[in-house]
Length: 283
Image 1: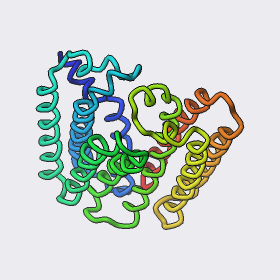
Image 2: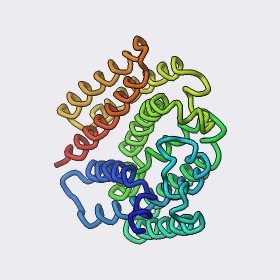
Image 3: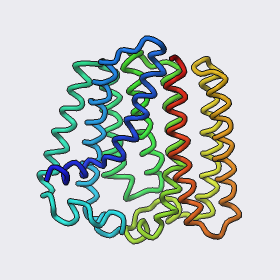
Image 4: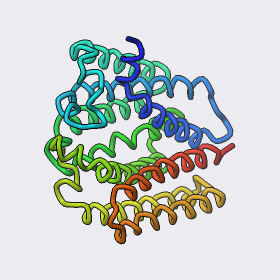
């Protein structure tokens, strides 16, 4: 039963966000790392992310049963009663926000609350089912973890925090659109109005290309404003242009599914490298 509750939190999403939290924290820390503060920030934010994922599972249990990749989730097959899942999600939120409030600072906690609210209420309860703009709004919550890590150290919103937010928000868009194309049949069956379902794959490919280009330009802001050096710039330029080239290939392929999967895999790889590069900038 513990494993069922654990899987309800979507561990893969938690681990992915944990990497960005640590990266943002270390970028703000430089050579002076408070390891205890990093640990409690990571624990607190991970609990908040877990809460959001549980709440999302609770809200989406009806449409999850219609999609191949989600039809065996615990709330769909009845392994966990919905009421217990909801209580579990609330407990995780209280614990996570409590850790952040008592061990970091009010601004960090407020940003975590904002990310959770946007993901659960604005995205999951509203826009995911009603508008193609749900992806844009969802990118706000997806961009919060590295900002939370950064603010736990800095205690204030500066240019570095703003740049991190925009880099991650822009990254979310082609990443999510690639998933939407790859899982197009699932989204169509569930009636979720993602961009390729409502506007078609060609328009989605153009949006992917534009957002990848904006992401690449946003990554350049860190070295331009003194938050990263030449090694970071060289690596991110190479990988960014590679992602841009891969996105451009989408205009010429007729086999969209493998291309979309490659875009998704590349998005994960470039995010991991980005986090490693900014985490080591001050070391």
